Amino acid sequence: RQGTSGSSYSCSLDALLRRLRAMDTKKDDKFADVLDAVGEFGTFQWRLIVLTFIPNIMSSFFMFADHFVFSEEKPYCNTSWILALDPNLSEAEQMNLTLPRAHNGSFLTCLMYLPVSWDLESIIQFGLNITDPCEDGWIYPESKRRSLISEFDLVCGKELDKETVQTMFMTGQLIGSLIFGLLSDKLGRYPTILLSLLGLMFFGFGTAFVNSFHQYLFFRFGVSQAVMGYAIVSLTLVTEWLVGEHRAHAVILEHCFFSVGIMFLMGLAYNLPHWRMLFLVGAVPVFPLISYIWILPESPRWLMMKGKVKEAKEVLCYAAEVNKKTIPLNLLEELQLPGKKVTKASVLDFYSNRYLCKVTLVMGCVWLTISYSYFTLSLKLRDFGVSIHFRQAIPGILEVPARLCSIVLLEQMGRKWSLAVILIQTAFMCFLTLFLPQGLKSAIILVLVLGQFSLATSVSVVFLYTAELFPTIVRSTGLGLVSLASSGGAILSLTIISQLPALLPIFLCFISSIAALCFSALLPETQNQLLSDSMEQFSRHSDSSFKKRRNDEDTPDDMSEEVAKNTIHNAQILRMDSNYYSNARPGPRLSRVGNEWLGMRLWIPGHEFQAQPSGRGQDQSCSEASP
Image 1: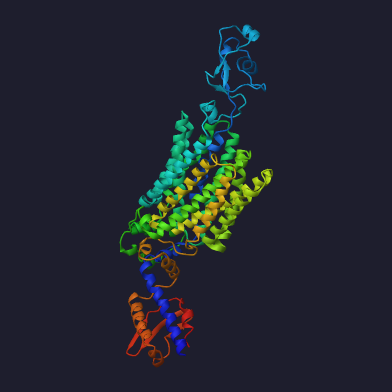
Image 2: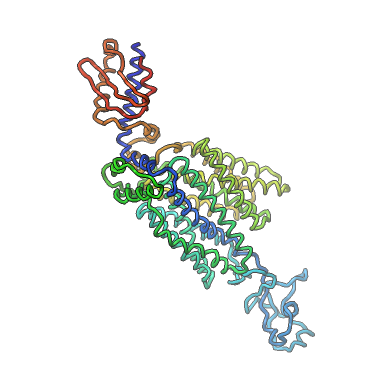
């Protein structure tokens, strides 16, 4: 009985110790209770998700538009000067008289016969012999659509490599991820999303009116920043409004709408004959998004971190009103500043704070691996002669079930193990590609598509996982920093695949996937954990204690801090003298009605302390050990 009594004391006191440790870092735990009162997933949350879905369609439209405006064109020199001699000449007769031919009988694309002052009969009789590069531009008689190549004559020595255009776009994403991440944590989620939507409107719609190819590159650079900025900040907003499994469902469904945007782009590109019309028609749906000024909510978590408690309460009350719920007044009044002061943070904290530095480096490695592998597999499909519509349509269609499958992974295995499974699958696909005979073209294409299927799943998982790892005060900045690695991986893929032998880029995909898998083992699990808001807990404790603390946050804190301290103090006296256990009356006397604890009395000779009722049955397992 002494052992049982001592065990009961130890179990009860360990629970109290955990509770007291959680008091210091759990200043704003009432926020989760307020969200429960607002409604976990009501009309307000549905509306928030729909509002963030719609711009994702436009983001993917602008992201992949380059693939459809650089269609292959076969140019011929413009020799309309001969029409002055006979305007009734057909196009075939004109080309036959004025263009030289190659050895196989086809017309040369970048040479023409010099104009002469002869009459048409002399030209037909004697022919032209002196060739020269095109003087009056080019014509594209075989082209059925007007592309950027034919618009700005990017032929015959003026060609611009498509990888250069994509690198410019990725560079814009790299800069935009950092700028918009910093702005989001500084100004708020609401104004930063509006700024990114304004960038989509101005640079996206304005692309249709450029007068030169350099202007086109500038507008694409601008729209890429807006696309990346919106992706980061909208994810942050959804993460901070939703709780539990609803957060994972919303993030994954939001990414599914990227595939909808790809289908939208392909339909327009197939039916519209001019690249300017593609941007005009495709960018029109951006303008109704100006209504977000009146209907998009700010993140209450960010408002709390910035000391705007009144504004945070107003936003929460509005959400409760939309959901037809009522927040208890006493619960709303308990929302206070964490640490009783405004939390400040900067990008330098990612260097000085050990936890933030570790998470940034590890997730940066993971993001770089996923981005590099995705673009490498896509470019390998192009090398196998797969058409642009197939390269965009098939992965775009497959990404929807791929991301929906990740919901099952996240619910059954958690964030950490889901990421590990996806990285293992990606490494296996790359390994299989290395050893498949090059003659099995269909098999290689199938493996590459399946690899993209796996990577599409990993994009959603890693976005959600990263957002949950960073605290609210620097969440967007952290996402922006790891997105630098994502853009860097895309640029690295475009550079390496054009410089190295065919199989080496795939081998690097395999190696990087294994490295990312090893590094990801250093990260904590975030499933079913409360979101972190401030960095005080990270600066005061080590990473291991942080994981323990987050598990302890489930313990109730209704007990007053003073009573808990007194209880623990006297319990320590008990442990110092084991003879007290044999002479004292049996263990803590606990009484309980239903699931409610009426109280707990710890007795020591000469001392007696009464713990206040907690109102919860959290310590039931401890009490039942008592005789």
